[in-house]
Length: 303
Image (tube, rainbow, N blue to C red; front, side, top):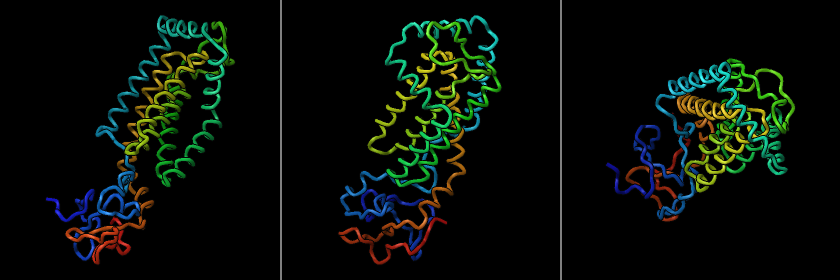
């Protein structure tokens, strides 16, 4: 039962992680961020409380689900590579899209294609990471975006080598905008996987914030536009793009589960020793948010 003397919005700890003079400590979200608590609850409404781990949702079966999705994607790739009827249908969609090119569409598609390939993609990810660090003051959030994005993109590289599907032949397109790419690297689409994985990552980082709805919507539009641009340019089949969506989700499920299970130490190191105003159960602080006599942590961290 929660002690009625605990301040509004307090987070009672269910383990023995924090103790002061033998009494369990109650930590308010505002205090966790070093913001004085005035008892009204307003001080911490805009603060996202983070624990000592990667705060991302993770599926319970974070290994089985990605393995099943990856297996299905691989099987689909092998069928598409060897089935002429399906390949012809895929190519027909690319050819139809190529008949409706426009100046604006060409510029947008080429910008996305060039921006999500090679060194430009790495630079883009680095800049976004720096922005996240500046806005959230969290290197772990920036690391999470980097890990999920590169992980999803890397999974497509492995699948490309495993499936070995040729890209659409530019000679069969009415308006090819990108030169032919050598190698069997069509299935799945790398730029699409980068965009989808990046969108998933920034959406997870934004959870619990006021702008999470905007971030999730923008991420969905970005992922869809990136995939559509690959078909528009004639460098990938529609099935390549769909496979990228599925494989990126599989990679995100696996990596979030892995980080949630084994990445706890990284968040703990970031938050260890951070200033915090706390109150022990049964003791209330002063009206200005200052802790009582027994309400100050003296260097204790999570054990």
